[in-house]
Amino acid sequence: QQQVKQSPQSLIVQKGGISIINCAYENTAFDYFPWYQQFPGKGPALLIAIRPDVSEKKEGRFTISFNKSAKQFSLHIMDSQPGDSATYFCAASHNNDMRFGAGTRLTVKP
Amino acid sequence: DTEVTQTPKHLVMGMTNKKSLKCEQHMGHRAMYWYKQKAKKPPELMFVYSYEKLSINESVPSRFSPECPNSSLLNLHLHALQPEDSALYLCASSQVNRGETQYFGPGTRLLVL
Image (tube, rainbow over all chains, first blue to last red; front, top):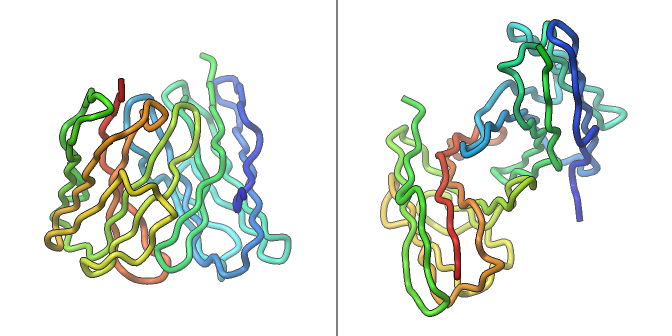
């Protein structure tokens, strides 16, 4: 049973463009929503995270938008760069029990 | 220092072998995790240890046996694995509190022949 649904499965963006990845969850007990970036052969690395009492969080070129009533959250990558090409996972966590979305493979073309 | 280390990086084993994966962190985290990740799939939670005690076991087959000998170390003992167990095994650690970031190691790439 997939507890976190993520879309799109893959995304191709031109350099300088905006990359948008969406996630939705069902379990209202989730209270922490991180995004992880994973390069081939590496472990996931935390990119940015948000708690449900905040609707938006920005760190550099990365922004999370969070809609608690809709149980949805999204990642925006501004000014996308070829070095951002990786797989991105959204996740939702409660009491150290974290569940991942299926992942989005982002390709940024130069 | 936000580093989680895992050894070995790669492991090839037969179905009758016994081997162990090791994970270590020195961030003072008291929660440690094992995840399994198949190619082009998200990490799947296997086990969670909180304060060196097993708190979550996601119905993992008994051929996988976790162990947390102290607050810095986490082992995963492997015995009689199947070829479908071939995957990247990730270790992570975090504080034991609501909504804490999990820090992942680089993983052990396991191939079962």
